[in-house]
Length: 249
Image 1 (cartoon, rainbow, N blue to C red):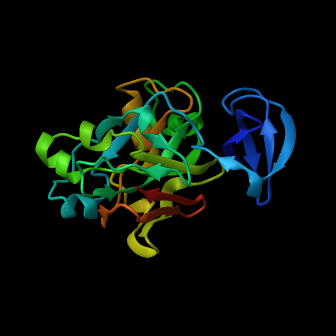
Image 2 (image 1 turned 45 degrees about the vertical axis):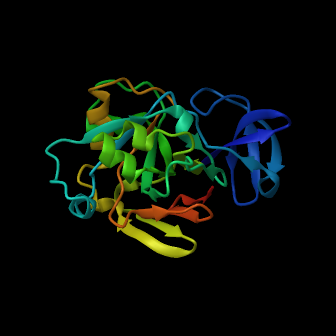
């Protein structure tokens, strides 16, 4: 099942998408809902598929990326937060502040939490996940070096593209994850190469903070991160989910 969030009839609505149409639903996908009409997918204005209360990101979760960044493999997951105001949807613009020359793309599998999650085991974490989507953890490497930490470098408005939808029927253990810039392949890996898998991460994070329905967990990026310039088109593509495309301005 593909869960979408759209702007329809001057309102923001959730729906269920197939290859050609969207069935609008009466409430958020985290609650009981009823079907309320059908609209063509081609005519829909897709938004970010969820608006989280928080975005919990995982750093250094692929060994090759740890090597390219000069980091040791962490003994525990390294987590940080991006603000909800960083979210932008499919076809939305990544807005680079004037003082920055470039930013980096980081293709990531994002986990969408389906219900209140606190101190769960990795085995129990599966039942707390609604589904998965594509994300781009846009980062200013320049600011990251200046600050020595990640909040400002990754927290600008529009620095978290997400979409195009939430795929609920998916095994996240061994998916192809790729990024492209202007059609050129930049990153390619399998999610099986993660140091900590999806459900280990949800469990670990839930031992630190309560995750709420709609919250996002970004599971780390593989090697191959690199610069984006104004005018570039960046795509995150994940097997079984689809393609998230954004323009840099």
